[in-house]
Length: 366
Image 1 (cartoon, rainbow, N blue to C red):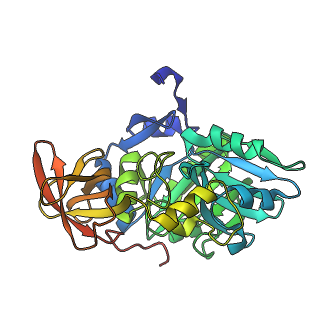
Image 2: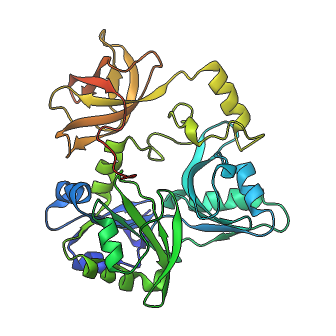
Image 3: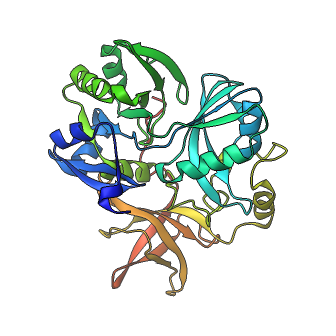
């Protein structure tokens, strides 16, 4: 897609004013980092204080009508019976072969209303598949681009929202309706950073008003871009569609079985995934931490002690918190915690220890 065809967030002008450097992502022109320190400074702001992300590019769709809950639960991977109204759930839409069309959060407003937030690039396909399989009386409404979504993340995020007069005492993976100077909001206790935080969902036409109100409440809050979002989520071991999961990488291989409703009668792709679980996958996701100073990148080969290729890095970066290289990789199932593997970093091999994610202590439930 050419730069001219890229969609822009309703907050684009605010990002320009803040000195953002932009990059294409999921068909959108999004801030990569801002003047004032770049990715590392933005990363530390989220871990230590509060960072603010514009994630208005994310998809949005509403499933409404009698039978909406049953329809979503029959198609999506996780079991909506595990949550009640007012709660959110991480789930996936799988292919019949067990791959992942997309992963998403679903918000349960009631039996006849659910709200899903897929990834930007996959929103149209998610809506199409949900609509194609919807029974009579259930409507799937594409709302992509109609909302602004602002993620306020970090240990000081509750104090910031309290200054705005917004609710903060709801549990992790739950949400509350609110209003800010006449603007209707959904305040979601969710995020993609591993820190305590909230995602504010509001009509797109009120984006700038909401963005300005966040920074007015805490002038020390730092705008953060896609670069910091990626280092933060990698430190948590969170999967990214297109890297750890895809139409060719199943949730069983990605070790995301917690998001599969094994006790449900069915979900899209369940037969293939049950068979794979029974047989055992030929590759699994593992977390790798550099022994030395190497920085891994996606696509780098993972080798055993004899130099045989046993996998590939799916996500790799420098961890600003640990100050060392970290990676997620798809490797042979024989690779175990505590093992040392080699990663082909350019023309040399570098040792990495196989560790249990997350790489740093999460603060989401603090």
